[in-house]
Image 1: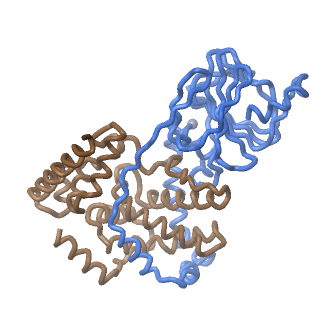
Image 2: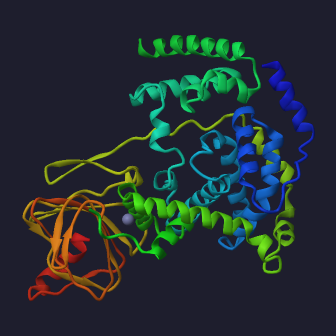
Image 3: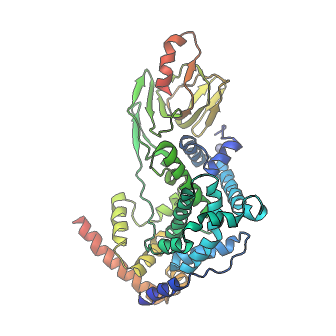
Length: 208
Length: 228
Ligand SMILES: [Zn+2]
């Protein structure tokens, strides 16, 4: 955990993006998304941001006359990229399409808010970012149980949470996780075990 | 088998997010039942994403990157990045809350695209039951319409468009037989009179009031807004 924190802190010192080609390179974009998903890699995010921000602002300026709203689309889109990178599945589509989808959804919800005064964020249901098969990989089917688990997950330390999410929600093996997180297999196993023990206690309390 | 699909133009509007929520939801529900349109949409998404994000490189003169960035230079992008990455929380998988409606004594689980949309109260007219979806889109009226076995919608025409997406069951009109997933978009030049032998549930969208065309139209006209 400490090593992890230090890594983050040193990153904040230098948000120097790597150079990205002007043309879309979906393999490279997918790698950046994967680094964000598995390592919360701020430098990868900065690189992605540098690549997409001018394009998103440009596209949004044609939809919203108010520059603040175009900036809002940018902020909202890129924070979704940061928070949802683990939903991106390289086997199911291109990275640029995934980012476009997020931008389109954010724009749709904002325009709907302007035009109809509804803040229902319908885009999540019209164009779900998580498909059924991903949702089904969750441990329990019962909605209440799911709620409890998700709530409990948030109480775990970040390093355990990442292991649990990778293992249960992204269907990665412990070996794959170790590789993705750059950790020894034994560390992944012990974190997973620790996390499960904690979750069991918490969930047990919920059911009492 | 599904025989009626959204046009290329509608799919394109769906991809770019430029259709109203009602039509977007209809296409999402159709695609869930129609693998060929789902596949086509996915391909169009890829093409649209590439085109949108590469446009700057292809047309450097039309709207250039620099000026777009200049507009936003009133605030610092580094600040925005910093604010975003300061949030350590990752998004959890959304919890869906499937909604069931009972219409004509049958229970239906609504498709995801419309499961959180508020439903107005049920109105009944003979074998028809209608519930308005509260999408707040002004003149565009979106409804769930249930036809009990043996029921029919009076013959009518409309000034704008009328979309019927068959969600469950089957119905017929003078032009043929329709099954779940059929996406039937009519413009103002056509009339039709759906009747359902075994009952059905439809998702309907109209953007102008209906006109009823039969001899009884004086009587029927007031129920146009009732049904759609
Ligand atoms: Zn189709």
